[in-house]
Every structure is written in C-alpha cells, then in structure tokens.
Amino acid sequence: MVFSTIAAVSTPRGKGGVALLRVSGPDAFAVASRVFYPMDGKDFTLAPRKQIYGEIRTPDGRSVLDDGLLCAFPAPHSFTGEDVVEICCHGGEVVTASVLEALLTAGAVMAGPGEFSRRAHVNGKMSLSAAEGIADLLDAKTREAVVLSSKHARGAVSEKIAAIAEKLTAASSSLWAYLDYPEEDLQSLTDEEMTSSLSEVLGDIRALSASFRTGRAVNNGIPGVIVGKPNAGKSTFFNALLREERSIVTSIPGTTRDTVDAPLMMGRILVDLSDTAGIRRETDDVVESIGIDRSLSAITGAELIFALFDRSVPFDENDQKVIDALHGAPEGAVILPVLTKCDLPAVLDEARISLGEKPLTLSLKEGADLTELTERVEKAFVTDEDLYREGAVITNARQAACLNRAAERIESAVSSIRSGAKDLATLDLEEALATLLETDGKSAGEKILNEVFSRFCVGK
Figure (cartoon, rainbow, N blue to C red):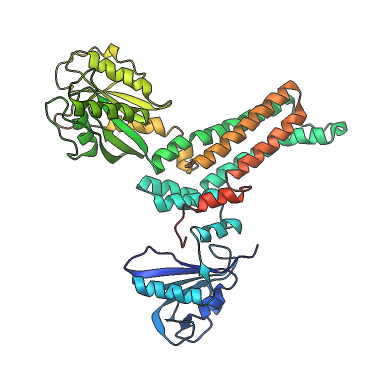
C-alpha cells in the first residue's frame, strides 16, 4: 500500500518553549528539504537520527520563519516504518502554524487523528493492542494508568495473546492432521488429551478476558457510591476518603440533598465517587424526596457501593430500605458494608445486614485508618496479580469481546470433539484462532482500525 506524505503538529496547541512537527511518507525528505536549510549546508539525510540545526523557511526560500532542529529517520527504522522527519521550532501558536503551512505547501497533506500510529500498525511496527496502549497512555488520569498503559505500548498484551495463540495452534494441530490425512494415523493426541489442552487454552483466554474488570478500573475508573439512611455518616465518610471537606456535615438528618461527586484513588483503583442523600421510607420534604430518588438511581449505575450503617442505633426500617435498594445494583457490583460511629457503644444487630461481605467497622470522629478498606477495594477489582504485574490486562471492550468470542468457539470445538464431530471442531478452532488474533489486530478490518485510531490526537 502506498501512502501520501502527511504532516502535523505533534505537541499540544498553545504557547510553549518548543513545538514538534512530524512528517511521514515517501516524500518526507523532499518535503522537508524545501522548508529546512541546514546551517552547515550539508544534506540532512546523510546524518540519520541526528539533530541538525538550521533555518525554517517558506517553500520559495524567500522568508525565514524560524530557526530550529531537524531529525531524519529513514525507513524502515522509524516510528511509522516510512521515511520520517521531525522538526522542532519555537512553540508559539503562530510560528508553529506557519511552519505547518510551509510543510503543507511543500507537498505534504494534513494528517488525520492517529494517522502516524495507524501507519505504524499497518507497516508492522506496532500491534493494535500496543497502539491502544499508546492511546490509553495519552488519556491516563493516574500514575497507575500510566504504568499499565506503558506496558501495553511495549507489547505486554501482544506477547500474552501470541503465547495463547501458539498453545491453541499446538493443541489443535493434531486434529487438523488427523482429518487431512486420516489414512496416515497422524493424530498424536487422544481425544481426551486434545480436549484437556483446549480446556487449558480456554482457561488462559477466560483469565485474560476477566482482566478487563481490572483494566477498566485502573485506566478509566469505576462509578462508586456511598449510600445509607440519613445521619449514617455518609458525608463524613466521603470527606475522610477524600481527605478534604467536600460535603457539608451536620448532626441534622437529611443535610445532603443531592449527589456530590469527586474522583478518588483507592490504591491502584480510580473511583468516581458520589456522596448521596440519605435513604428513608417516607419524607414530606419535596427536595429531600428528589434527593432520595437520585440516590436510588445512583445505585443502579454503580460498580462499587459503600453501604453505611450506624452501629450506635438499632436497625430500623430505613436500614432495611437501604438493603432493599441494593437489590437494584448491577450484576457484579461490589457492595462493601461499613459500620460507622464505632467509637460509641454498639447497638445495631449486625446479623440483620446480610450483604455477602463482612462489615468493616470505622470510627470517623477523629479520623480513621482506611488501609483495610482500600485493600478490600483493590482485591475486588485486581483479581489476577500475575497478569497485572506482567501488564497483560485488557483495557477496552473491543479486546474483551474478541476474547469472549474466541472462548465460545473453543467451547463449541470441545463439545464437538466429545460428540465425535471432529470436522465441525476444526471450523470452530479456525474461527477461534482468527478471532483471538483479531484481539491484537492481526485480522482487524478497516472499520475496527478507524474506531481505534479515531481516539488519537492529530500528530500521533
């Protein structure tokens, strides 16, 4: 495939010390030579991967726009796999736009979003999962997200998928040989051994797919909510987690009338946390009633729910209302019961709180140690420490969907082998391998590539 020569500014728009412009394509060196004039008069292509100082001029050579540095990267030893030139100029908006205009006048065309990275993928310089890792790196909101995305960009997911694909090919090759040459008796594995090997591959795929929960929690954040009856200590708890006074705290029940939102790091997990109005059976206050409705609605969209109960008072109908409301939580949501005001004598019947998790007791009157709470949140969302250390964690729905489809096909193949329909099993295994490789872009179509690289900024 022959591409045009593209150019774009790769640094953020605005005033800065330096701006970087990138040119890539078959005419990259020719375009740059019409704009950049080395001070030593030498041909910059003779010094690849070295910065050359020179003047940046309009293509007719009459006007000097700026002075700066140029670095040439001959194909295939460049980011895109094509001839690439990077020009650094002063970082003013007008001077940067002028240099870009000069490059476009000299023969380049404007790059689209993510077009440099897309060319790197198409030219075999970068897997699709690595490209997605770069996109995640650019969007990272936390240091943990930076570390994980950096591992993706360096191929951690690619390596894991390649290893699984190799095992899948090895496990199914015996079946393919048997069906292609039945008279030669080439089947090296028994049916039981074959299904056992495929089941092992299936386990690897399922584990990798399940890591999407972790990747999403680290990279994108999860919606979290604090719920409880009025005066259960929700706002105090919210402020303690944030280590700042975000919600108003009083002894008057119903002080919080609306949700209060804030991002929060809990260990490696990013939580978009909401403090909510207290849930009670009945209220004559119209505003409070609206707040309660919003609290109930917040539960239906939360993946992490802190359910607070005041241990210093008896369990009542409002506590039961909270428990009933939690039945509306999404499937798989983590619900952590928290007993508050534990500096006071215990009155609450804890046996009435049946939420599947052991309640955590906290006193927030003079601060609290939230270490155990943070550890429980991390444990709920980082379910495979080995995969996390490797960086082989799925971070987007596209990858997870591919893995799930591959797993379904392997399950179907195992079923076919057990029932004696080995010819059907081969079709399932071929589709499983193709779908598995699609996770890393080995067989991704144009539509998928368009969706992936549309996330990128222009110039990357």
